[in-house]
Length: 357
Ligand code: IPM
Ligand code: MN
Image (cartoon, rainbow, N blue to C red; front, side):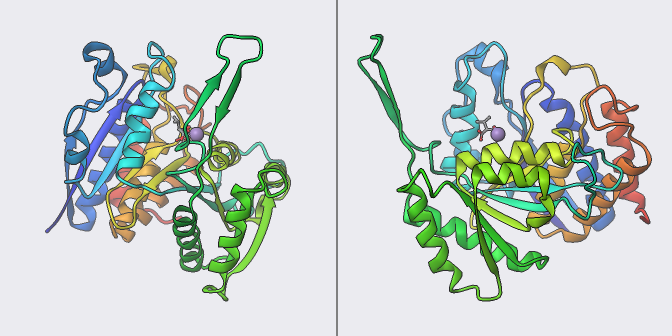
């Protein structure tokens, strides 16, 4: 029997609540499809930091390396200065495990409400491949004349040929495998950020020569925000840098039904990858059993897909579709018509039984 070792970081706020439901669903899938998941829990996050002053303990990253994948709830605590937990836990894991892709599907399931008028599941179905180890996230910076009226803040963005190329190659490969419109759109800002995006552009066109079966396209990031709302059906696979990817995937999450369902994977194709709901820790809903666990459940589904358990992943997806279509009144916290645990139970049961859609 196959056993996958999963590192679980439930994290802060509602993280532990949604991860509990995710694990429930993963176990249901494992039982049905004949594999096992063995979990190691890590209590990293705001609570631990406030108590001990420690974010990731000594040797923590090496512990993660011993697993087949990482399952993360949410990092972020209202009593901790913004930036500390994000940089020392989330970004540190992404960087040190070299998870150079942040894969964020934007897919509207049937029955899910979208704020985009006259668009349905056939229109909203694309994937954003976000570079995950460079850009502004990796750059340094500094202040000049600090504290004076003429203070200057410099914020650097790092863009390497190596980092850009491996990201773009991944996106082409992904687009080929996805086999939908076979169109890869690079999203950037070539008209203003003329160093970084010039390198992206040259790399994109060079790599494209290896993929004659894939159509290429380019859109500025601001225009992309407009197209997401106006013509989301134009997109198949998007490749972009870390910062733009961060921004446009929040917009993407909203058009697919909100943070209640948006999931992503931090991928190192040769190493250990991490899967997470893309919304935050939603502290105000903590402990109320009202948060939507579907984003965490979908992150679990992506994790199984990544581990090669394709059938199990499809069973979870079908269960999620069924629950969205036939049960939930809304995907928003407190408005679902069901509690967090009830949604988890429904998806787990449908995953175990199998559903006809
Ligand atoms: C995300 C988040 C993180 C990011 C934050 C929490 C550092 O917004 O995963 O999109 O900016 O990458
Ligand atoms: Mn973000």
